[in-house]
Structure formats: structure tokens, C-alpha cells
Length: 345
Image 1 (cartoon, rainbow, N blue to C red):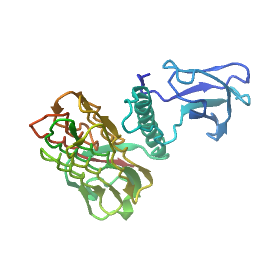
Image 2: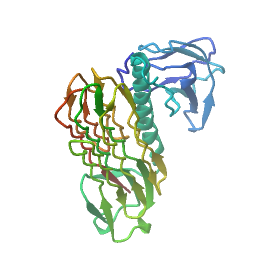
Image 3: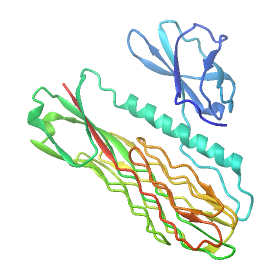
Image 4: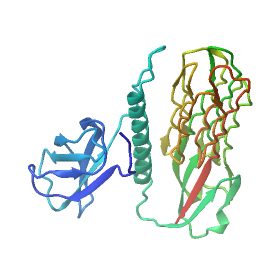
């Protein structure tokens, strides 16, 4: 299965019925991964709604549901995907590569990323103000308050730099070497009253972690991104170096990074584990951030350098070598972080 659309929610006007079905036009893995709310159009009051009669779990085209209570036509029903942030796929050392389970884990990771994107949009909605100017920083800078005398608050979104992938050593017969991929950076959102800001607020944008040099060398962690002392988004962790070991072998993933001093916090995703045999190695899927995508696996029967991450805050992939490779491999670099300052008045 594949997640071919970035849609993860759908809204309808209530139909006053518990019998009429509502279409769910996006993929969901399990019935429990769907939730719903009803919002009174006139007042904005929102309540949770229990869903029943699910169909289509695991179907790439989605399915249908009903509601346990009749949602009136004066309310808006929103059905959305809510996937638990867990990783339940296991790899049996020495066993066959579980392609179907691995694909399901990637599907779930994509769904979690879409869920975070949706949640961060909802969580940062600020009523009573309008965004007058949005400032994006992909390098260090500063926010000068005097330039925006009309401002009431600022809403800051920060993402750290992604971790670099590890390098891989040379190999002999029956050996493999796989560098770990870097993890995604942490991210967060904070809302600050302009009266609480100093005249100039320093903005730091975390650099992407460097990939490990060719050989058994770890990648560097990404740098932290910050807006003064109001928010710090941690950089992703670097992947481990890949030593030459006897195949087959399972390569572990990396841990995650998060943010602190923030209203809303999102962890970066970890790099996933992978499996290597003497004949074929697969570079681990790197970690992604809320503002960047993972570097997908690269299977090779010889060897390959790690790939650099793109967008913001994602990890670079690790280098890898199958057996009898005389050239060491380098890891890919993580992508730079970003700080976005929305000025509202």
C-alpha cells in the first residue's frame, strides 16, 4: 500500500442521521485510527463524536463511517485520522527482510507526519488577530521590534537542523558496513506578546549535521534553532558509523529530537532500522521533521554514499557497503533548520 494523498481529514455538514454514511476519502490503517468532532456553526462549540460501522481500513481509497449520534445540520462534522506515534515493526536477526511490514511502517510514519502538519496548523490558529507579515529565516538573524510598531503578538515556528548520516567502512568477503541515518529535528511553536520582547531578539538557525567522513565515522548532530530564550528546537542526532561486520546484520535507528520552551512541541522522527546481507544492503530511512521529508532507502549490491537531506530539519542517510568493497563510503548531510516569525496586529 502507499499513501498517495496528503489529505488526512474531511468535513461535512451534519445529516441528522445515524444511518446515512459519511465517506472517508483517505487511507487509514485501523478503525481506531479515525476520530471525529462536531462543531456548532453558530457558536463554535466543539464536541467529540463516536464513529461506528467502519469500512475500508487498509484500503488505499479509504472507506465509510457512521456516527453514534445524529449530527444536526447546524453543525459541521470533521472526520480525521489520528495515528498513535509508535513503531511496532520488528526485524528478526538472520531472517528474511519483511518488505510488507517495512512498507506498513513507512506508511504509518507518513501518516504521523501528515497528522503533525494538520495539528500544528490547528494549534497555531490565533483568533482576534491577523497575520500582517511573515518572516522566514534560513540563516541567523534578528527580529527588530521597532520595525513593526503596529504589532500585538508574534507567533514563532522553529525547526532545528537535521542530523548527518554515518559513513561506512570497507568490507571483505561476507562482511557488510552500514552507517546509521540521521534523525529529524525537533520543532515547536510559541506565541509571544510584543510587550515581552526586547528591542532586538536574536534568531539562530540550526545548521544541518555533517555526514560522517568515508569510513566508520559517525555523522554530526544538527544545530539548535531558537528565537531568543522563548523557544529552542533541538537539532536531529547524527547516525552512527558503520563498521565492517559479518552479515547478515540489523542496523538500529537513531533516537529523536524535540523542542523546549514552546507552546506546541513536535519531535522529529527517528531514523528507521534496516537489514543487510552480504549480497545486498539497504541504507536506513532517515528521520524527518515537521518541515522536511525523510531520505528513502537505497538498496545496493555494491556500495553507496549517503544522500543529503532536503527541505528543513531532516536527517541525511548513512553510507553503506555490501561485501568485498574497497572504497569506504561517506554519510549524507542533514538539512538546515528554519525559523518563521509571523507578526500579528
